[in-house]
Image (cartoon, rainbow, N blue to C red):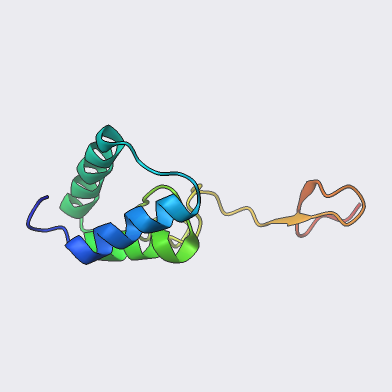
Length: 96
């Protein structure tokens, strides 16, 4: 494990992944650490990146900030709600 990666936070991220039934293989862990390193090199603290994913229950890790303020892991600004009648996604400002 790289010295820049907090072991406790990494272990908690892995536990969260198991709890959402998305356990990582050893190779997936290796890829995730590589991605964390890339994010770290562009100014994203690894602990914060992991904590955001843990808090949001996200299976992936995402850049902090960006054009969407870092609040949506899919990288879009569209707010989606659910229609009551058919349970299909629709934009919140939809008038139909």
